[in-house]
Image: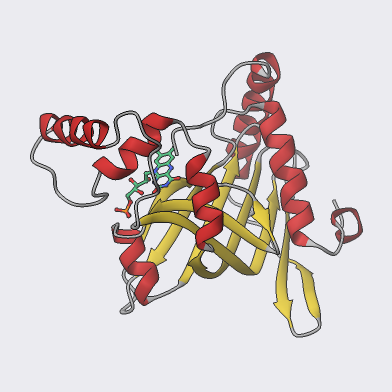
Amino acid sequence: MSQETLGPDPLSVFESWFSEARALDPRFADAMTLATATPDGRPAARTVLYKGSSDGALYFVSNYGSSKGHELELNPRAALVFFWANLNRQVRIEGTVERAPAEWSDRYFAARARTSQIGAWASAQSQVIASREALEARIAEAEARFRDQPVPRPPNWGGYRLLPERIEFWLGQDARLHDRFSYRSTATGWQVERLSPNLIAHSSVERRGRRLRSIAARNSTGGEQNTAW
Ligand SMILES: Cc1cc2nc3c(=O)[nH]c(=O)nc-3n(C[C@H](O)[C@H](O)[C@H](O)COP(=O)(O)O)c2cc1C
């Protein structure tokens, strides 16, 4: 793989890798690790789902009152990692996060399944809850509250957009020399550089990649996209 093959726009490269991963196996192709940190530098990471890109930003949704919500409020710097085992590819994205416009969140929320909409009202994400029964009681309460009417978007729930400053593509190669390309946003556009790969323990990655690619090829028609979030 070369810089010329990848092209000058990392978001287009990302979208084409994402489409390939989803076509091969839609189950969790959209799952990404989101890392945030407190202002004093304590990191936390969790999985969230990728909800598409527009105007150069990547979108995800969450509860604004969650731990990640508080962290992003105080320190908007964040990182995303996608790993598509079936393609033996990784994408790392770093940048700053801001809340998506309210209209984007309203549109997204309105299109969700009603059960997910009710769930967004029922769960005070990241707060301690006494039991599963207590959570079920909160769901029943929200169902009763919105019976026979559309469920509005809760004020503490919505989208975030990450504006990338660095995007790195990692492509595991059978020839043992993995490709890494780093795109950095500069005043004059994206600057791309080839980075040295990890040369240790890659043979197990290659074996695993080959094995998973053949499993994925066999199962490529299975699986649904994730609609819970
Ligand atoms: C496959 C998968 C997808 C998830 N998608 C989301 C998501 O899109 N948004 C979200 O807020 N949490 C999502 N979660 C739950 C988060 O990983 C996490 O538990 C939750 O957001 C609370 O994180 P926090 O306490 O760090 O804020 C997902 C979890 C998994 C395993």
